[in-house]
Length: 283
Image 1 (tube, rainbow, N blue to C red):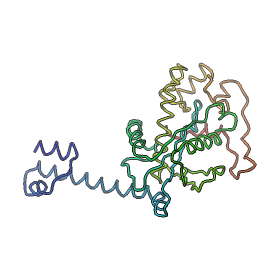
Image 2: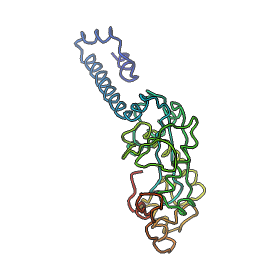
Image 3: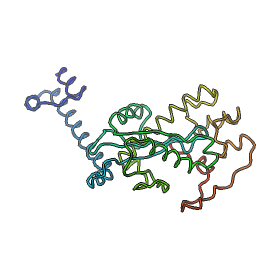
Image 4: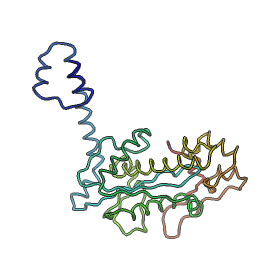
């Protein structure tokens, strides 16, 4: 029984029909336990399969029309007080399924780090891009996020034929596209992009922690948590702090900025960087 459990439960190997029949005929509690564990795994696999089919509904609809290079696009790092905003774009071959891929905010750091290389090796194409702090302060965080997205899309090879974007549209790009509200929970490609953007930005902030010690960037990645705000007040702002964000301006003794005006060529409403800093998402 111990060997069977190790092989077919602990290691998750498929249970051969002959061994399953033998276990069902065995009245011992150990046999019942192995069969129960295998059945639970099968139920979990069926549920995950259904979740992945649902997560691929946008991609599948496009693949069926002959559109092959469907790119999911997402960003990470809109709310931090320091560091760049990152974006990623991912193209999967039709029918690709990667278990456990989900909105990066629903995954713990270890799961994201484990899934990122799987996503990269499974994709037809992927790209990661950044918009730097100077750009965030010059054009505001909303437009900087779009800029990072556009850079990631333009770096794809092969190029995208259709874009699935988390909650936005890139009107300056002449590509068919869908802005999907909460797209990182509804599209596998967007969820994969969210994981790549998040892990890339987190790694970048760990590197910046060595350059700017004392702020704790390796731990909080620049988000406005209590430890970061305290360090900002104690040490002042460094060169990678976003000077268009309210807590940074307060630490520097600068007046609050008015809301950013909407662009003339866009229907997007005004978007204040201070609003983002005051309502941070989960890290």
